[in-house]
Length: 75
Image 1 (cartoon, rainbow, N blue to C red):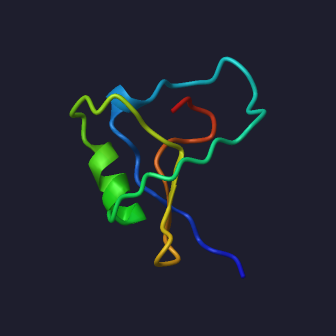
Image 2: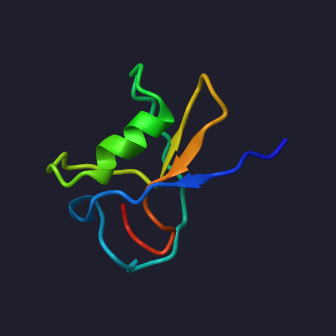
């Protein structure tokens, strides 16, 4: 079963346009938060100097997947 990936661009202070090298690994972080993938995407879409970002947010309760940074850019 495939899932559609929704896109919500993160704030410009959370990412760098372009990429200096090809993607060669994936890092998965478990945040232990009750926030949904949608809520995380909204949170990181604001420029409030959170100091971090992610390419994707995957919800463990619903089927939601949000992309926050384009593959050609650096989170």
